[in-house]
Length: 315
Image (cartoon, rainbow, N blue to C red; front, side, top):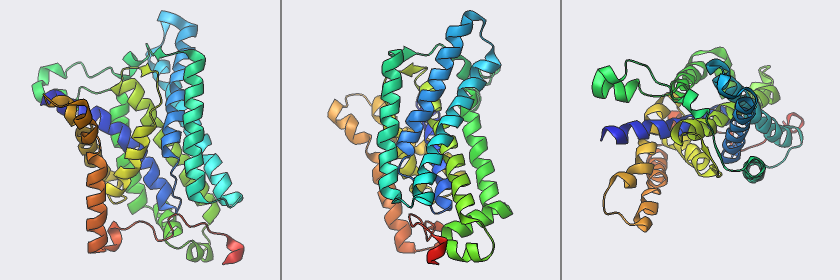
């Protein structure tokens, strides 16, 4: 049970990065279905940067740089994907759904290309990301659950909490939410709709990209040999499951992680049944979506202008 909880947390934090990033994006009215591709590109950029750095310095690698360089590369890769999405949907007025799906296909292709160029890589740099607190073992099960994780796990929680605070307690968050609810009204109030949508999408994609890096470096211990777009779709489902609240997504991500790997901890389960178990997060999301739709509470609904493009001259 202890191993199951720890694994659920490690996997869930990859979902949390993606969910937090997508929530920030959707609060501006952008429905970005390209998150799976963004997470693939983020993971590829981070792993490739780590590969180049360790190939250059060898055993003399600095711990701080071995962690910082991949994170920076991941953030840049994710932000570039967000900029591409914003440029197509805000500036060129492309359909958001089609653009998002195209971005996923593009991101998966870029990831596969980078893997093919370097060959299947087991990143030696994963040891830097999985270093834990030295006193974790002395605290028994409590230390295993709360202090036996790498830096990206705690970073995911911090980003989710900060994002929740900004969205609900600051003027920037209020402006962002107003853009997502009614961009015409926000524009009339002097809020630059395009700027907010560009910024939120780029920042959201940068955060989501870290989810891909977390999945590879922390959960898979550096095993970078195949595409990871599946976790991106789960991250999008988690946004709905947690009704667009990053703070609630912290618990929701652990639940999703547990549901996704539950079959691995149950003996006598066939391969086909294991695949059915992996459907559980989506089933739970559908149930939550139906439940929140029936209750129809405004705070549990998506932004009213989600997925709708806004052009000032058509106001």
